[in-house]
Length: 362
Ligand code: SIN
Figure 1: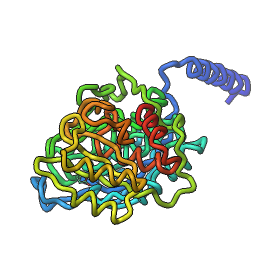
Figure 2 (figure 1 turned 180 degrees about the horizontal axis):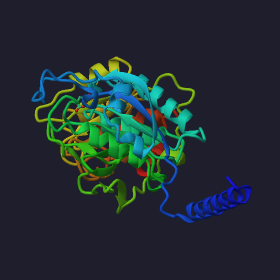
Figure 3 (figure 1 turned 45 degrees about the vertical axis):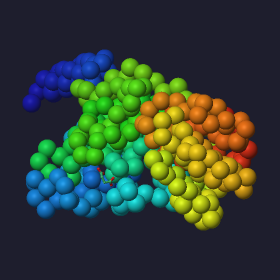
């Protein structure tokens, strides 16, 4: 080829590639860098398998490992750079304080790393609300933490795990989810970890935040937020579990007609440092129970009055003279959440007035 021709072709190529480069630099629609999201798996139905595609009852929870769960949703690769760790492999009715401590410590380690933008925790639905509240009080970061589960096992027709996991990863990778506390996302809805509850034994729309409402939707591959939790959480709490390997013993006494003190007395004899009453109505105490709780308090046990009703504030000095009895009220926390806050409170103090203040803060 004539050397002049070769030069002019080379020059044309240079001009052309410079033009393409400039065009790319200006292309605002170029895909943004994917966030880095770590999935911590703990088991549950989302990792469950059944005998057939129609087995939605009587399946086995906590069978699939985290890598298989990630492999099962190839779309995750478009949502984030995802990697998984298996923290536990249990049905969530077997969740323990020890697993919570391990989980909180791992979440804190991961979120302290610059190359981690958010964490997703896969979990059985039965105690999601407890783990969510525990982490809401103990995670020391504003980065997104999203807890997800499913109501149908991975082998079922229309399993809800894959879409729930995909949405959870999108949410954990979204800057919009930062600073909103630990979030629970299933069934296209985003709920605050402090307030959400499982309200139906089997349907996939089981997660509700009674009265207060959920925070937003997952739709069209992104979160849409409409409300914010206002109670202190995550990086703004006073609780530090980094050096703890166990939590104080706190138990729940369920209220019912014709109740007796057998359970409460057994809990105190077994060394409970705190007890939560899931009382009827506004945390009311049966006449035969008041002396039993009073005795517990006199032995130094912190008594919290909560309610089995499922929504509403338990009023201080309403059904019981809490000032006189030196009891604490749970505000809007149900008994299972009040137990968590009381355990953490007891790692700081056993002054009932300070503990009452914590129930009005978190
Ligand atoms: C569990 O909580 O581990 C079993 C039930 C579920 O995940 O839906």
